[in-house]
Image 1 (tube, one colour):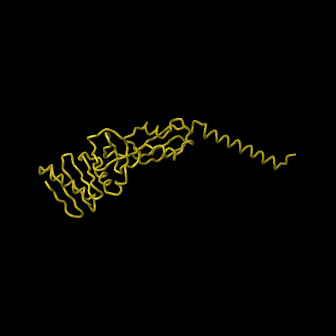
Image 2 (tube, rainbow, N blue to C red):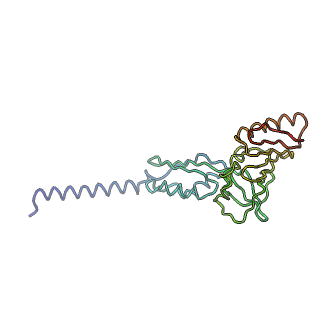
Image 3 (cartoon, rainbow, N blue to C red):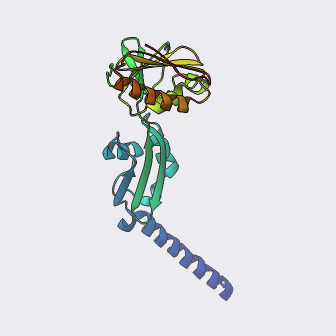
Amino acid sequence: MVSIGNKRFLTFMFLTLIFVVLIYLIMFHSKYFEIKTIKVVGNRILSYNDIKELAKIDYGMNIFKVNSKKIESNLLANPYIKESKIKVQYPDTVEIFIKERKIVAQIKYQKDYLMIDKEGMIIKKGNYNPEIPVVEGMKVEKYQIGKKLNDIFEKSYLGTLLGLIEGSKSYSAIKYMNEKQIILVTKNGMEIFFDNPSDVNYSFKFAELILEDLAKKGHHKGTIKFIGDGNPVFIP
């Protein structure tokens, strides 16, 4: 015979099993938990559909099957995406936040050009773009899309300069001489020579003010030199 205590235990286990099955069915087979809204925030270069396809999620997918870490990893595999974060809002919404890399310069490689961001990350390979400044003085023997070209951008202030000219259409070239000496060339042919500046941000902003003043005076050719902490010198 089954004791009263055992009967109660078996009843409890049976009801618990039914409860677990019901919860499972509700969570994984109910339309209530199907994704109905996918929001993308921060994209300017990649389209909404590009992001959705990279994330590998779609409408109708069960929200409990969303693996945030895997989606973030999928997104970061694209060279245009610098940062990604996924936010799941139950019962039916997924938000994708991204930060994109911006092409700020190009480097010649054989017959093509490698498009890079300010950190030296290679975003894509393409044809010469006259709107983007060319980095000169750097030989490329091998490369990989989605990887940094080399560590020069960190060892020198080249990366900082690229960040300062990001979005500007005034420059045609960046001549990399060595870790201490870099020359910016404007589209008018004016050169800004930086030689081991103590504060490249300050020197760059000062240089732009000088360029503006020289343009007002009719000077569009020549060299502005910044050497260490010394005052800038203009050589026509």
